[in-house]
Length: 255
Ligand SMILES: [Zn+2]
Ligand SMILES: [Zn+2]
Image 1 (cartoon, rainbow, N blue to C red):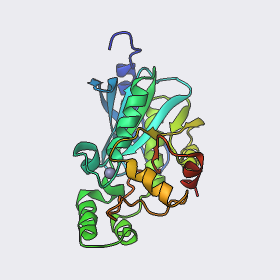
Image 2 (cartoon, rainbow, N blue to C red; image 1 turned 45 degrees about the horizontal axis):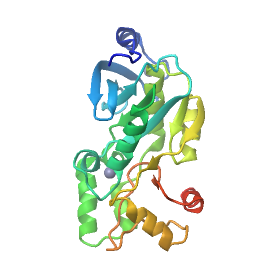
Image 3 (tube, rainbow, N blue to C red; image 1 turned 135 degrees about the vertical axis):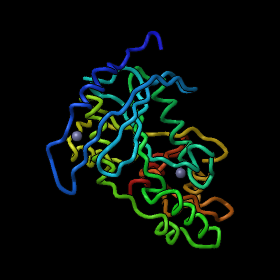
Image 4 (cartoon, rainbow, N blue to C red; image 1 turned 90 degrees about the horizontal axis):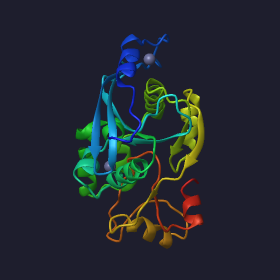
C-alpha cells in the first residue's frame, strides 16, 4: 500500500460518528461509515469501508482505490450482491464477471470505488432467488422467473449509494455503467456525475453466449439464452457489454 494515497480513515470515521441526516419520512436514508481497513486483493491494493444504514439495517461495503476524498471525476461502479455469482462462480448470471472486470479496471487506476450493495437477488434475498432458480429448473420461462426473482426498488438503491459517496466525501464521479438511466437516478439523489465509462467485460467461454445471442438476433436483444435454451438472469441493473460486440449490438442494449 506504499506509494498510494491513503484514505483519511480517522477523519472519515469521526465525521460519520457525528453525522445525522435532517430529512425524515419514508424516503429517509441515512448511512454511516462503521469501519475502514486496508484490503490487498488480487486486483490491487484497496481499502474496504463498511457502512450501515437506517433504512434496511444492511451492511454495505465500498472497495476504495486511493484517496477519493474531496476528489473530482472519481470512477465508480455500483455492484449488487450476488452470492451465487460473486462467490460461487454461478453461470446462471454474469455477476462475477462484472465484478471482476470492475475491480480489475479500478485496481489499475489511481482512484476509484466499487460500491457493493447488499441486495441479493434484486433485494428479495437469497431464499427467494434460489426459489426462482428452482422454478426455472422446472421449466418456468424467463418472464415468469424474472417476476419470481422480483423487481428491484431502484430508488432506494440510489439513495443508499448516493449517501455512501457523500460519506466518502467524493465531489464528483464518472459512472462505470452501460445504462445511462442510472446517471439520471444518481443525479436525482444529489450526486454530480461528470461522465459515463462503458463497462466492458472481457470475452471468456462463459459470456460468449451474449455475443452469440446478439449475432443471432441481429442486434435485437430480447432474451439472453444460450444454445441449450437455458435463460441467464440479469441481476445487475445494467446489461453486460462484452468485448467484441458491434456498435449496433451495444446500442440495442439501450432500447
Ligand atoms: Zn445521513
Ligand atoms: Zn448474479
